[in-house]
Image 1: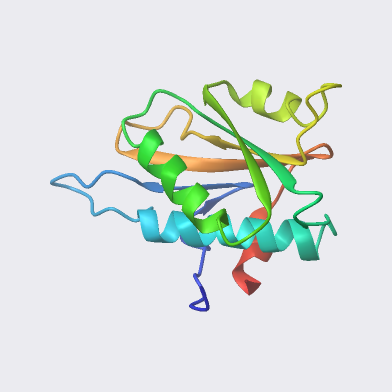
Image 2: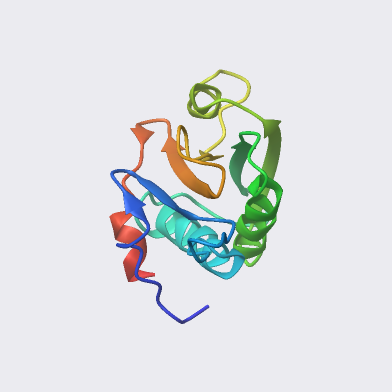
Length: 147
């Protein structure tokens, strides 16, 4: 995954959002290929910027949750595909809330290294997005561009 992806057009504050389902009015911008690259970049960011160890003995543990949007399952599969080159353990939380995904990083006994919520909040059905969390809170993904 050497091709860089400019996330500026998909960034909305600390989230990444885009059109996940093409309509007669809008073309898909948050494609599975882009989501896979984002997953890859997130793993690189956790290892290089957050300095999380990633070895076969100590895998990085990521929780992924989603809202009920039609594109959620495809986005989750694309994220996991992008992370598969790393020593990572994925916790599939299924239908979740954004606060629950953050709390998965701090609840004792669960404490994943990071979590991702697949949601576009209040936006129309064709949108979807990604929110990234570590125990220190919502993570700003501007640094993903360098990966």
